[in-house]
Length: 338
Image (tube, rainbow, N blue to C red; front, side, top):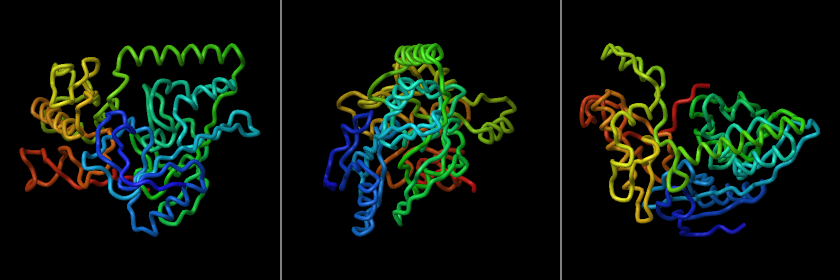
């Protein structure tokens, strides 16, 4: 497996922005992945995982260390006919289509969502009331430091809204096994129609390129509770609700980045955009929501190559630029209790 140097990542993410990976590889097998981790260990390189880049913003200065873009794309059906094992580099849609072609239903709920299976489990991808974790049975993961592999069940991941233990970046996904529903031909035909309609609806409601989808996550209950106590008014959890009330769709922009005219919580980029444009626009959106509603939006988008979290967040008073709002804070993964 080749380890390349100074590889542009601009064409490897949906925003089409960002700099180069100092070192880059695309492991096609578990052995390749192990060799990549061994190379990083021997060369004292940090490791960053990249899927399709559909939910990522890459620093304009690039990413230090080794960027691993898995291309493990095998799909197989177990003896138990409703179990399907999928490589981490498989696209979500390719997995869905394969399952439907084999009369297995359930995953069609995520039709039209870009990204890989690895990225989907990392963020616990969701659409309406469905989370991909609901369908996971087992997974094979590899340790970043030792190369050890092990098989784990769903509980190991500590899934929550937009969270999984993979975000601690100590273990990486190799394969996921999903428990689906074995369907007859009529049930499969219905699921195929549902797949096509979900994709049609998504394409009509959301931008289909140069975006990461919803940039900000919805609010957690404790975030809303603290604001409700201060203001005396109950708050809704949906980030898009507050952004939509601001009337910024298709209007608010910075450089080559603009709030989509289709959805107020989606940022789209022009061909000349940089990641710094996206960051500046996202901060404007945070400021407007904070000034109007007293809430601090937090990103659902993943930041790659940034030394510190590049947006505003709640932090200590001495670092605030206005009450309750801070410009920078350490770039740490979400707190996930065992």
